[in-house]
Image: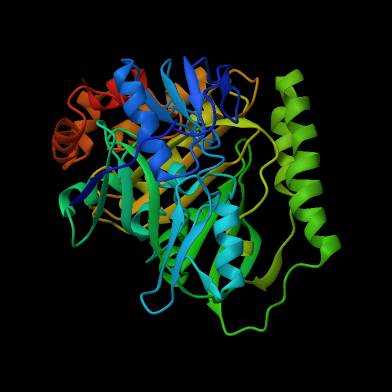
Length: 447
């Protein structure tokens, strides 16, 4: 473990106060003060100052978590100045990046260097540290989450010290801190494994629910990245298969791409969701129309342009990670729930996969995983629907996504995370006074 006491300083731009809200608008907090450090030294100074004043500390990303994971009434660390690429090491196949850097900037910079992450989620607005800390993932037969691609990290701990760790240096801390929920310290810098840029061919096409579920194992096995969306109240799905390609690049046309990704997936979809919120009885009919709106298409492009897509329709979300073998049974129960209930669900259910990894609090820790994500349009009552879905997921040994809505607590989570105690032991060692605690962490990790 490399530890240093960072130099003093004011801790970044002058402290400010005011409310902070997440992207979905369901979390609002008023920290005692907030700062935007521009360096690791300024970040460390801010943490030391907060400790001297008896304040808790949380770091905010861009607010794409639906849980209050970043909420604090103490010191809020803002990300906007702790940004930038710090090193690109082609020989080692790594890139080192400041924690507040948006994934969009990382992806665009890597592309300029002819490099890429192996896998990623479907939005680029998150900061790199926020994405890692909450377990952001895409879909993949062999390639795993953002956190699983981290090879080293730098973190400011509770006393303001700067700690560096990797698989070869303080391995126990590194293992936990790759997906640390902000409970171990404030990440200042991350190093990711990267590879030479490649091309992906995306094949999107409608497919009936019964066919997708009957062929699920086959579709996952045959494709590097397979996912699908089921439209509740219908028997229709939209599938997406992403596989490496020799090229040439053949991106979507400007007009056709805009129609699919902006007009239909955002503009028209927003209008449909608004209509469904105003007239819930219309939702099943709207869903049938929506399920037929997107047509089959195939295109080839660099990874981040295939993996990611714009998300302009605001919603709330709950996502559960289940053992891969439970996928079809859980989906069948979810479909039966929607059919027999009075729930009116305008958002499709998203289904993705991930291989097992070795991170203690990863939702894919130790087991091949399927992810089932349910959404509701912002402003639509969601609690009863999510509660009913959560009962299904919990019965299948589900693990909730750390940044998405759920009601689980530390006692129940310890039952589905075999290495839960390993993580909390590292937390006790690094933050015994709970400088980085908040109500959410006390619920999911204990106190």
